[in-house]
Length: 361
Image (tube, rainbow, N blue to C red):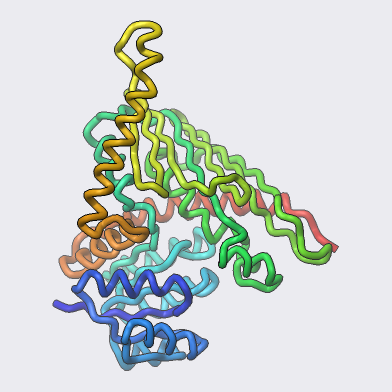
């Protein structure tokens, strides 16, 4: 069965969705929608799509899609997802799922009530190195998680960052958690998977490192540190717009081994305890690490030759798993519990950050 798919929101992120859908070859894009008609027409022209709309309800009534992808700014995720579910569609929503935990929970409950599938676009959740870590944990190689360190770097001098800094009315600035809320899912869903406490202790601190363009421009915090303490596992999460080079990694400290996941290079290496005595063990360390990196590099060359070494590998894997869950009426790729736990953690971080905001005259 070929799935009928519609996309609402035709900005930069929509390109990832369209190319991923076309790459799978198991679905047909029957319409794209944006309140700015030119954006919809431009997306359709780039990918040879036929039907464009500026009214989402009209798209739903005419095309009757099986699946709707929502790639708008987060302020409209909840209302559009509810509208799609109400029309009987399965829904994939870009991160964050909604503006807060309450909205996210209502979406999950509505999807379950209607027997529809719902997922969120965690593009790194199924990155090859993330899947490798899950396998190592499942096989008992890592032991029990003791501590996690999640680091997400962001470039404010990039194309998207520059527009946020220059535009005092940018939609990112209007989010409750501003810049952080648009990106926190990438940082925190790597933690919640292995820190299973329902109510861990959370402490969040933020500040603005970049100078404001004027004294009247509202603050836009761009550095964030989050500490999460559970009963048996702890985590430290860092969002940084100023650390260089810009990096994205996760370090998993287990009772048997420690793993370092580099999402930029798509490598996972283990810090193993040397079995050699004394100074020989210290000498062995650099060579062991070099060999680990060589092995990972070789695997990536093989993936490159198979055309599987690209930025959106994790998202495409999520997409395939989600479409299969629709076709086979099987479990969604990311459990609703995991989606809601991440949403609740984001909520608490945003609450603490907003509580420390300074009022600008």
